[in-house]
Length: 299
Image (cartoon, rainbow, N blue to C red; front, side, top):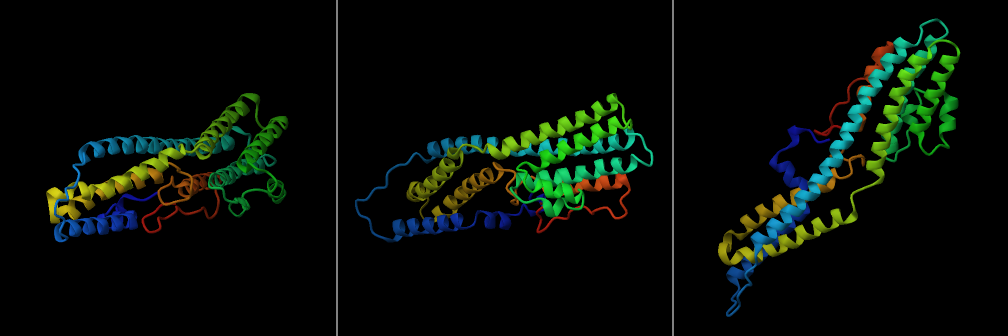
C-alpha cells in the first residue's frame, strides 16, 4: 500500500511513465506539423472531443469504482481477520482451563494462529509459506502440509481437532468450545471471501478496453485541439492525457489487491500486527516488531 506521503506530482509523473512521455512527444509532433509545415487546402476534421471525453470518463469511473470496491472489500475482510484472531487468542487463553497439562495446548493454539494468517497471506499471493510458518508449527505438521493445496485451511482444521481433544480431556466444556469454534467459522468465511476476490478477477474487458480507449483518445486529442490552441496544444493535451492515464493506471492497480504489488492491501503488515498481538498475549520474550514502510510503501 502506497502511503499518503508519496502522493507528490513528480512521483505521479514517474508512476505514469512512458505513456505520458510518448503522448507529450506526439503532441509536439502534431503541433509542429500543423504550425510549421504548409498544408494548403487541408482542413482538420472537427472532432467532438468533449463528447468523447465525457463518455470515456464515465467508463473509467465505472471501472475504477468496481476496482476500488474489490480493494476495499479485501481490506475489510482482513480487518475482520485481525479482530477474529485477537478474539480467538483471548478466548483460547482464558476459556480453556489452565493447568500444567493444558498450558502447552493453550500456547500452541494461540501460536498456530500466527502460522494460519501468514499461510493465508502466502496462499493469496501464490507463494510458498513454509519459511514463514516453520517457527509456529511442529515439524511433523509442516511435512504433512507440503502435499496440501490449501495450507491455511489445513491449519484451521488441525486447530479444530486440537480443540476437540481439549474437550475430551475436560479442559473446556461444550459451551466454551462452541464459542471458540464460532471464531474459526468467522475466519473460514473471511478466507472464503478473500479467495473469491483472488480467484474471480474483473472481466478481461474491464482492463483491456479502458486502456485502449484512453490511448486512442490521447492520440486524437492534439488533432482535435491544435486548430484552436496551436502552439499551446502540447500543454493542454498532455495535462488532460495525464489525468486520463493516471485514472486508467489506478484502476488497473486496484482491481487485484493480492498480487504483492505496491498498491495492494498490505498483507505482510497486517499479519505482523496479528503476530505481535498474539505474541504479547502468550508472553513471548522477544515479540516481533511492527513492519516499517520501504520507500513509502507498506507491504
